[in-house]
Image 1 (tube, helix red, strand yellow):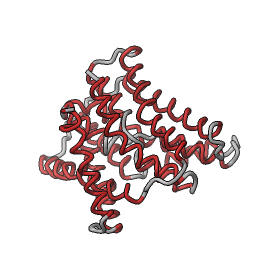
Image 2: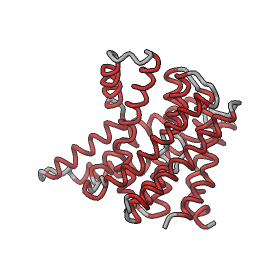
Image 3: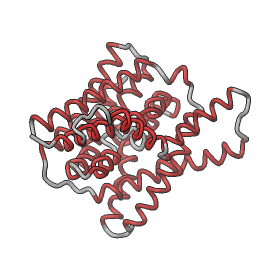
Image 4: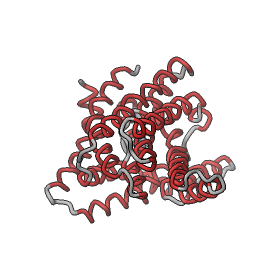
Length: 315
């Protein structure tokens, strides 16, 4: 119960505050857009750049950690994809979008603050290692699969689609922030560290990133009220909150024998609800939008309890 009160509820209260003020009309849709634009395009990329720049590459990029998380993610994706097709008889494009919901956990806006509140800032090394390839890899795979389905698997177009998808992903602010972090780290290795005033400015921006993003996330979630499609939404919620972290836990603990820090990072990052990017992906193609939007909202609400359970299971 103490974890629920001290670790989880403060994060979701900030999200809930953003939701309530948007619901009551105290914060306009354009204002929510402004907050999210500030967070996603500026503050969060600075947070990522600063964190990646200070990341211990040897400790962070553990093969067992990455495999535990991503095997779980792709298993969840496969279940969502096949379930949408064979259980709910959805079109192929819908299946990819629903599978992407099962694949894309909110590793940054939820995973970072909850892990930090539960285990401290020093526990975030594994989280940031996972995040550093999360969006670039998953978006590239998701876009490539969607385009393959839309073109009915034309082999000639797939390499071009994959390269185009990767080029597009590499231009997004979050990925640029990650790349800047690696550049800063490489410069530091050559003895060319950033001046202290720049680090201080980055610290100030980073401090604003997560509170602003969580508050804005509440406003964004208000738009995506659940409607219909109950069974696919339940499937996405179970894949995101039970299957993905469950596989990550079993692999991290029993297959790769990760230390406590690695186990926590793998499981807590996997245990997060789908991020809003899962809906944006569906919206980009105009498929399964209702399932994706509702799944983000429902799974985020249910994750208050499931995260509590995972915190109780973890050492």
